[in-house]
Length: 336
Image (cartoon, rainbow, N blue to C red; front, side, top):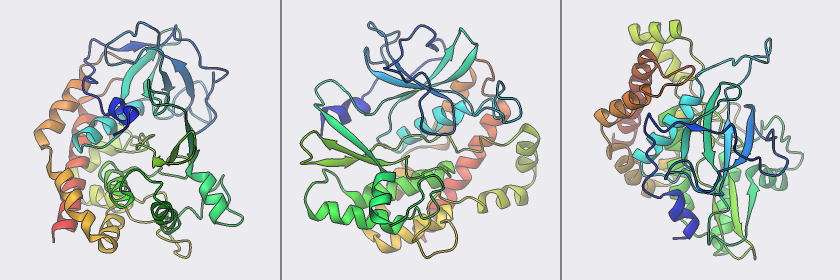
């Protein structure tokens, strides 16, 4: 296991309600006052030395991510409490034993702007020189005329062909079948609809001799973050409305270029396991390795953070219902 992976998966990343990180005085990394990738406003910052809390790495890069701003009123967030989805998704991923960059609750006190800081998944001490190549680069190489802005031809079959080719050369340092199975399962569990070509990639050693797929990052377009309180309330009262919402969930990618629509969340996991049956018991173990009570306790703790746009009791209850229902359906699909 590489040093960088050890640090990503390190213990001691539990942030308490009294440990909110204020990034108002954190220095900018280079010229990245506004980080150019993705829909949400982001700033690439450097953690001070000494770090404000033991779970932060001194001198390491972190992305400060805000909620998506309203088109009509750019100064106001469209989904003001979206940042909670990013934090919750990270903690659910940890329940599953996944490698995810740590995510912490943060605020820019100079603007009273809440958000998260997401740990940069490269540049760890002793990791050596590494190079990140986003998935979009590979899509453009493998699909002539690939439209990177729209990403309509983003598909799993091309990704798996790339993975097999890399494995045949002996350059991958981990099992790609399990990696993509866990990715699909995690995205289905949290309802992540945004695993586009910039939200995965490969990390290469400086000499290009070995590489690994990135940890699962940018997981905040999930967990019903876009739903307003009235809509959540109706879903919690009406199983049919909840069921309709769950059935609309789609992975960002298609199974193949020729298929007309994106891959349904749970069906995509089923289909993958039919192709790679050895992955199925791994997914079942990861889904069964944590309890409903652990999920509720984690969400209750996040409700205690004193932040603008706090995690409300209603949203915590809804995320519990949403996640528990998806887990039950995933297990039913995999075990039957």
